[in-house]
Length: 262
Image (cartoon, rainbow, N blue to C red; front, side, top):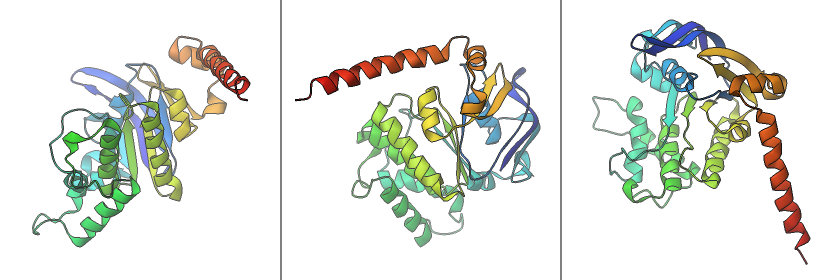
């Protein structure tokens, strides 16, 4: 469980988030929605203890600033956008990096348990048989699975997603969401995701947290919170009309395809 109590955060003298209070319950998935610049990424960074904050951020009742990094890493993992800044390791070694907080600093290296966890994560993400390939030789979709496996190898309670599907085609975006839904299906793990694509976010969960201008604008199940006037006020446009217009175009494509069948 992650609790925010009158939390404020930002960068230098600029405050981005203002007086946020909310509880992310364990075993549930959430999507954080809102326009660019509303503080979504800042919120994830504050929750993970990566930037300073005022007020309180508590992980299972403990203040995040009082926790050692290894302890935070056992609770929370952050999965961000895939970029080109990574070391040319093998897939196996890259996934093993996710075990950093578990490896005994005074031992000779990875334990049998570490290797078992890495093997399981490779299997979960369909990377068995590829583990000796270098990551700088992989396609975007394969690289996405490698970093997902690395995140899962960390064995956190909660994964914070920060726009991890940017620059990926729709198939690989959906694959990532389906992997994460499978991981949280046991009711003991959670994903809290920041995504610009509302449809993709709702594929993960309908538990929503809306931000605007660094403040909590609304939270709850999408169908209850997201009225047309509410969405218009958040995004400064008629979102529902845009979605319905897109749906009509897809209906036309579907109808055309059906009529051409013999």
